[in-house]
Amino acid sequence: MSFTAADRTPFTYVVECTPTGKRYYGVRFAKGCQPSDLWTCYFTSCAAVQKDVALYGREAFSHSVRKIFSSVEAARRWETRVLVKLGIPGNLRWYNKTSNIAIESQAGVVRSSATRLKMSLSKQGANNPWFGKRGPRYGLKLSAETKLKIANALLGKPTGPCSDVRRARISEAKVGKQRPPFSLEWRRNLATSHSGNRHWNFGQHWSEATRLKVARANSVRVTCDVCGLVGGIRAMRRYHFNNCKLKNVKVKV
Ligand SMILES: [Zn+2]
Image (cartoon, rainbow, N blue to C red; front, side, top):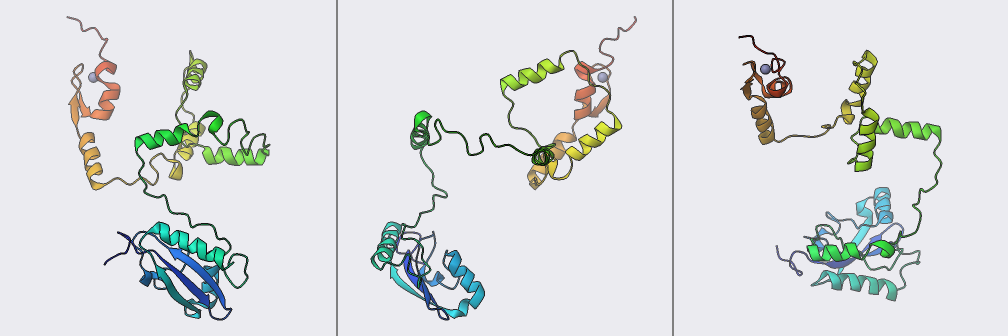
């Protein structure tokens, strides 16, 4: 397959809905695109056109490729020029609503760290469009019902990273307190808040290699050097070695 612009063949086209006579003038420049896409696998990106396609069917449209370009830039500029020149936007015989230049997708664009730094710095402090302004939801009063809904939705979900201040506060509040034994209600709450899509591994799928790795790591058997018990590494690490009950037992000689 050969392209006019390295990895794609940008083109402009016109489609017309035969029953209504309404037309759409468009441009296509996606990676890998070619004129034969038109009306075979590409049916414009215009929602209004697609609505009529659903209504009248694909067969009710005629379509023609108008021009082929050797660069994305040229295709985009040509399209917006044609739209302006023919006064298409605002004309009810056309689907087009705007003559704005088609936005080129930024997906997959890799920028150098220098560029990223520049972009970041240009949006800092007073240069940030939000500088000195209040957020769109500032001062919003939520009803008790909404608050409850939010609380329920967040229940059991992992929180973001804890700030040092918050960490200190939590720590302070817990000093000298011992966790009471789990009540049945507490256990149930923990279970519901950790089940289904609230579980931290929900929807996570491990590759076969990862599964094998985990299985292997879990199958390691270790011997407590204090009491000599042999067991799985997780439980042993928790209850033996430095935590072994026999650690501080003085053996009578
Ligand atoms: Zn032990």
